[in-house]
Image 1: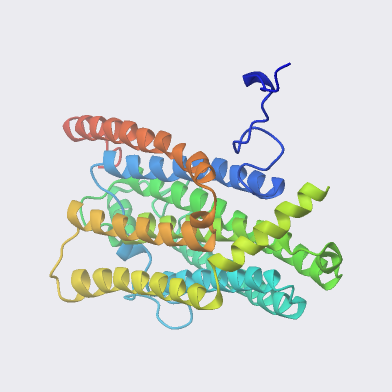
Image 2: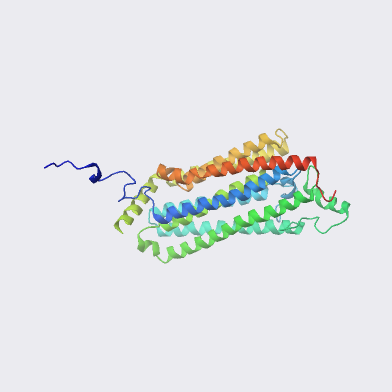
Length: 245
Length: 125
């Protein structure tokens, strides 16, 4: 008799009513984002703990005194220059990554290959710089669980070993905490960069194999790109909290 | 399967609108300028000319500049600005917990700082 449709039978048309993708994003991309959010939590926990330690200790290592060499150019007296170069390399490789993504949207295989190669080169240069930085600090006596005064017993020798790195009072504990946190956090970041390089190489090989061309979409470049930008993002924070503040 | 293809093509289309080459380079120059500003403050104003001194004020400046850089990376390079608002909210809102954690750890750090200052525990002094 009646042609009115009851409330229940009406086809719902909202974005969450089914039948369409509410975020208009591909599954793998959403999952990459969620992984990155969880990874951001890990890095936040590390950096917040570093901040809290620095805040709690009555004295702390002076960043300008510990990072002041440019390998192969100057042994001391140049704070921030080397890390500035590293920051520039990483930002630059992030730009070449977006350019690869952009080339992917135009299905231009050749350009994707070109920009991916630059990105991989940037990543390798960054990891290389980090290795130099690590070995420099290691030569000075910093490492996981040790600082330049570890193993010394004579109070004067301890003061002499730590004096160059402090502006305020000297603290063995603060130097040790700095050392542990520096190698843990930059190490974890360097590990992420290394994984990123590996992923970049894999998608480069897939591009060369025409995998994406046959698939008709370079979406995988975007997903790996998200990871790569995240690594750059983390470095922006590491740079501020370890080198500037 | 057809639905999947639809998402991909639509997605790619939206991307083309979001970031072209010109925009990529302009974001790069903003990031470069912000980093250069940080270096100018650290090497110039603090070290060379001694206009600014290390302290809370300077730290706030550095952190604000860092957050602006983070915004540009996440919004443009990671393309979050051009996603649906529901998705931005989903990945963004959880960082309230991080703010809460920072507050907690600062309170904890302040308390430890007080006890370390009043009861020195330097073992090698």
